[in-house]
Figure (tube, rainbow, N blue to C red):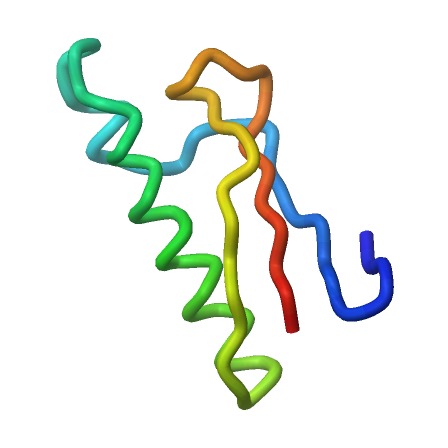
Length: 71
């Protein structure tokens, strides 16, 4: 969903292999790799720097992963 220069992006499943295959005690900071993945994808498409904020993640107990992408 796009609102001005902000895109609300997310997915319903955790696709991070490190989280899926790792022990339950992995810290939620592992979700920052998803922030980097979303950043790389949007910067490639937009061909300019963007900012990505993790709003919630499955690893943190949410039902989905959500990000704010500022173009």
